[in-house]
Length: 135
Length: 97
Image 1 (tube, rainbow over the protein chains, first blue to last red):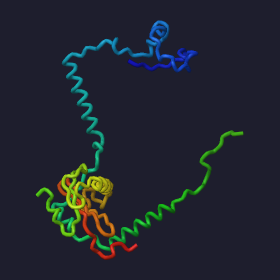
Image 2 (tube, rainbow over the protein chains, first blue to last red):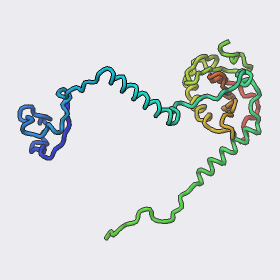
Image 3 (cartoon, each protein chain N blue to C red):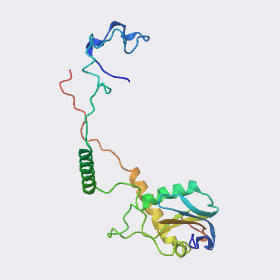
Image 4 (cartoon, rainbow over the protein chains, first blue to last red):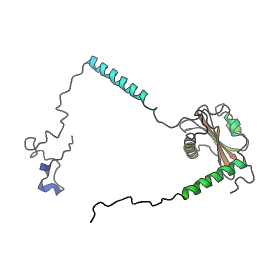
């Protein structure tokens, strides 16, 4: 079992010694250091007895809370659902390709959008960082 | 018929049928086992279906066409399946830039 704690008293002189063990089981006894307040000893914890009826009561309550919480939130996010679509996909797929004028329309619209994006510039109005009392 | 006749489309170069997760269910022609192109087109489809096409929320498009000079991918949906057909572009001057 590993444990993590930090305490100013633990800053020994040999902190920089790479060979220093993390915990010296002999000298770092619980009586000499305040380990007890920083470590949760799981093995020593008393198990709180939960009888069968309380167990089922809690399970019911938790599942009730969970379902009410789920109902109140937005639906679970997943990949977006496909559109309903068409009844005969092969007819749609073998239909006439989109017209030349539509292609030209979307091409020019995309070009204009790209050009507009390139022309977006930041205009300097005032300093973002204002020095306070800097000598 | 499982593929609903998409393997019989005239001037077809290949076809794919995907499920809602984008997994290939059926494929043929140049798109046989085309998982890479399936993933790319599925990415495009997921972006496209988020875009509203009209004020009605329920309404959606029926067809996506991805054009190249010599071929195109035509995409549609039916019964929670994605149907993709790679077709030859017949028009002599597809895109005037």
